[in-house]
Length: 125
Ligand SMILES: [Zn+2]
Image 1 (cartoon, helix red, strand yellow):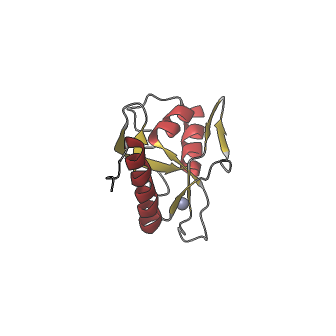
Image 2 (cartoon, protein in one colour):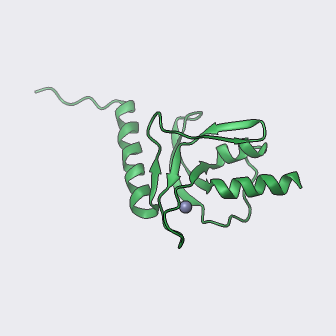
Protein backbone atom coordinates (compact mmCIF):
# COMPACT_ATOMS: atom_id res chain seq x y z
CA UNK A 1 0.00 0.00 0.00
CA UNK A 2 1.35 3.37 -0.92
CA UNK A 3 -0.07 6.39 0.76
CA UNK A 4 -1.84 8.80 -1.53
CA UNK A 5 0.15 11.81 -2.58
CA UNK A 6 -1.81 15.00 -2.26
CA UNK A 7 -0.47 17.63 -4.54
CA UNK A 8 -1.11 21.34 -4.25
CA UNK A 9 -2.85 21.21 -7.60
CA UNK A 10 -5.18 18.53 -6.32
CA UNK A 11 -5.97 20.58 -3.22
CA UNK A 12 -6.74 23.60 -5.36
CA UNK A 13 -9.00 21.60 -7.68
CA UNK A 14 -10.84 20.14 -4.69
CA UNK A 15 -11.29 23.55 -3.13
CA UNK A 16 -12.49 25.03 -6.44
CA UNK A 17 -15.07 22.27 -6.75
CA UNK A 18 -16.27 22.91 -3.17
CA UNK A 19 -16.52 26.64 -3.81
CA UNK A 20 -18.49 26.06 -6.99
CA UNK A 21 -20.86 23.73 -5.12
CA UNK A 22 -21.38 26.24 -2.28
CA UNK A 23 -21.88 29.07 -4.76
CA UNK A 24 -24.62 27.07 -6.41
CA UNK A 25 -26.27 26.02 -3.12
CA UNK A 26 -26.13 29.45 -1.52
CA UNK A 27 -26.44 31.86 -4.41
CA UNK A 28 -27.47 29.99 -7.58
CA UNK A 29 -24.19 31.05 -9.13
CA UNK A 30 -22.47 28.84 -11.69
CA UNK A 31 -18.94 28.82 -13.09
CA UNK A 32 -18.76 29.08 -16.86
CA UNK A 33 -17.56 25.95 -18.59
CA UNK A 34 -14.51 26.29 -20.78
CA UNK A 35 -15.46 27.34 -24.27
CA UNK A 36 -18.84 28.78 -23.30
CA UNK A 37 -17.64 32.11 -21.93
CA UNK A 38 -19.18 35.26 -23.28
CA UNK A 39 -16.81 38.13 -23.99
CA UNK A 40 -17.81 41.15 -21.94
CA UNK A 41 -16.80 44.40 -23.50
CA UNK A 42 -17.04 47.98 -22.27
CA UNK A 43 -15.40 50.69 -24.28
CA UNK A 44 -11.96 49.41 -25.24
CA UNK A 45 -11.68 46.89 -22.38
CA UNK A 46 -12.89 43.30 -22.54
CA UNK A 47 -12.85 40.35 -20.16
CA UNK A 48 -14.03 36.78 -20.42
CA UNK A 49 -17.08 35.66 -18.48
CA UNK A 50 -16.15 33.34 -15.59
CA UNK A 51 -19.38 33.10 -13.57
CA UNK A 52 -23.04 33.61 -14.27
CA UNK A 53 -26.17 34.01 -12.19
CA UNK A 54 -29.02 31.54 -12.22
CA UNK A 55 -30.94 33.20 -9.40
CA UNK A 56 -34.47 34.52 -9.72
CA UNK A 57 -34.50 38.10 -8.45
CA UNK A 58 -38.24 38.25 -8.97
CA UNK A 59 -38.24 38.46 -12.74
CA UNK A 60 -37.40 34.94 -13.85
CA UNK A 61 -33.93 33.47 -14.32
CA UNK A 62 -31.28 36.16 -14.17
CA UNK A 63 -28.67 34.58 -16.48
CA UNK A 64 -26.42 37.64 -16.23
CA UNK A 65 -22.65 37.33 -16.25
CA UNK A 66 -21.10 37.96 -12.83
CA UNK A 67 -17.79 39.78 -12.61
CA UNK A 68 -15.28 39.50 -9.78
CA UNK A 69 -14.00 42.75 -8.32
CA UNK A 70 -10.87 42.68 -10.46
CA UNK A 71 -12.73 42.15 -13.73
CA UNK A 72 -15.21 44.90 -12.89
CA UNK A 73 -12.35 47.26 -12.03
CA UNK A 74 -10.56 46.39 -15.25
CA UNK A 75 -13.61 47.17 -17.37
CA UNK A 76 -14.25 50.40 -15.48
CA UNK A 77 -10.61 51.44 -15.79
CA UNK A 78 -10.17 51.65 -12.02
CA UNK A 79 -7.43 50.59 -9.69
CA UNK A 80 -7.93 47.35 -7.88
CA UNK A 81 -8.45 48.80 -4.40
CA UNK A 82 -11.27 51.08 -5.48
CA UNK A 83 -14.81 49.94 -4.81
CA UNK A 84 -15.96 49.38 -8.40
CA UNK A 85 -19.74 49.43 -7.82
CA UNK A 86 -20.70 51.46 -4.74
CA UNK A 87 -24.48 51.08 -5.18
CA UNK A 88 -25.33 47.87 -7.03
CA UNK A 89 -28.97 47.31 -8.05
CA UNK A 90 -28.64 43.54 -7.78
CA UNK A 91 -26.94 42.01 -4.72
CA UNK A 92 -23.25 41.20 -5.27
CA UNK A 93 -22.40 37.61 -4.38
CA UNK A 94 -19.59 36.96 -1.90
CA UNK A 95 -17.47 34.04 -2.94
CA UNK A 96 -13.97 32.70 -2.39
CA UNK A 97 -11.80 32.94 -5.48
CA UNK A 98 -8.31 31.78 -6.23
CA UNK A 99 -6.01 34.74 -6.66
CA UNK A 100 -3.38 33.50 -9.11
CA UNK A 101 -1.01 36.37 -8.33
CA UNK A 102 -0.60 35.26 -4.71
CA UNK A 103 -1.70 31.63 -5.10
CA UNK A 104 -4.32 31.55 -2.38
CA UNK A 105 -8.05 31.87 -1.96
CA UNK A 106 -9.51 35.26 -1.13
CA UNK A 107 -13.06 36.38 -0.50
CA UNK A 108 -14.26 38.38 -3.44
CA UNK A 109 -17.51 39.92 -4.63
CA UNK A 110 -19.19 39.05 -7.90
CA UNK A 111 -21.01 41.94 -9.53
CA UNK A 112 -23.82 41.66 -12.03
CA UNK A 113 -23.02 42.71 -15.56
CA UNK A 114 -25.92 45.21 -15.65
CA UNK A 115 -24.48 46.96 -12.58
CA UNK A 116 -21.05 47.20 -14.20
CA UNK A 117 -22.62 48.63 -17.36
CA UNK A 118 -24.68 51.23 -15.51
CA UNK A 119 -21.63 52.24 -13.46
CA UNK A 120 -19.73 52.64 -16.72
CA UNK A 121 -22.49 54.81 -18.20
CA UNK A 122 -22.48 56.96 -15.05
CA UNK A 123 -18.74 57.50 -15.38
CA UNK A 124 -19.20 58.51 -19.01
CA UNK A 125 -21.64 61.19 -17.87
ZN1 LIG B 1 -28.58 37.60 -10.81
